[in-house]
Length: 118
Image (tube, rainbow, N blue to C red; front, side, top):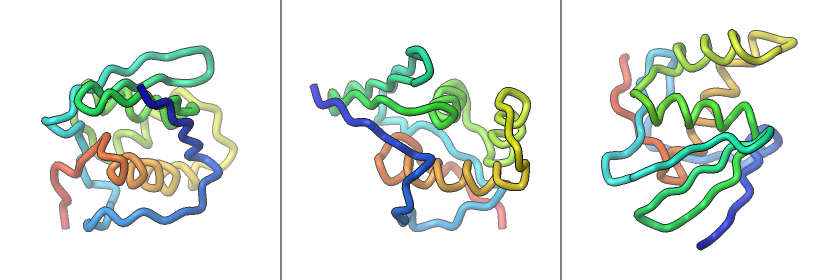
């Protein structure tokens, strides 16, 4: 079993998803991905059974994965939920953070774009 630490907040690496993400973009867990997500202290543990890979994900990024694991959600709805739960100094930074985090999850195969509204 591989254990990866995913630090989403500080990563400057750009991931290409093939689609641009807008606030209206809906994301979901891929149907081939059987994902188990649990909170572990201040982090989140995600186990993807198809690849037998375990990811330790820092919060608040782990919350996004947990919410999308329950149901497909738009970038805007994810941002709204995050604002309700997490103390954020600059609200204008929330949507870019969510978009960046979702792009990284898409690149890892933990999320996929269900639809993009133009």
